[in-house]
Length: 199
Length: 142
Image (cartoon, rainbow over all chains, first blue to last red; front, side, top):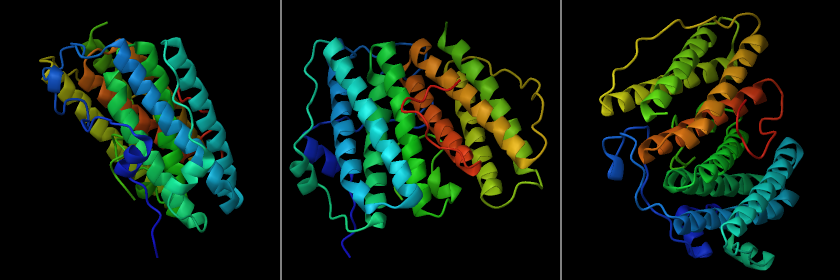
């Protein structure tokens, strides 16, 4: 059977984005521009880069909205109730991020037409397929937020995006739990959330 | 506020997290998924403590000695889980504030990844109590 899986590369190709591949785990790993960890801000951080990071996050949120809207008819019971809630939350994220991009003088990335999303998504014949796809997609978003947040120059943006990052991490926990009969090790697989651990 | 001060504050909270999950993990009242989650989350909180201590060492700062662990959670499993939920919310709030006060990118990255892990603990614990695991779109703690 063709497993419906989406990874970071699939997403970047689809969205036309180029996100950094850098990242760290824990607090003191790979210092980069701040090896000593003595409180030096990243000198490459600029308002323009902030706007690009937030707009990239908006593209992810638009994709998540399309994914949950596509998957809802496949879902039943508690999983469906969760997915309905997650769809509403992804819409809230997209709206907030679009507002931030406008506040920064930019043009928010617009959602693609629904048919374009459907054509890009893997085949989703049933609930199990959707749960796999959705958890992969949440992990792509988690990975992007984990890498983007520390690069943001403006503290207010870091706070808003970190609150969204945590919400996506919670979505992943619920989706992974639904796939594993609530196994905590499958639902919360890493002590520092990076989105790189895949079920 | 210096990064060192922020990290020391987070370390105090994480040490309290370890104490809470040690109490849960050693409780004979907790069984099944709840017991397994307590063991797992205890291991996560210990990793957070070690990472924060390492961050202080990297800054050439002294690692503070542990203070009082505070009152241990007790009572029925639901009450103990509720104590853990309340503490996770406090931790999330502190990491969220840290996104304003911290300066070093490595610390910002670590704080975000840890905050998200605490948010996942929170969602799982709420699920154990039969509550909505993800009630809000923007997770900021309390």
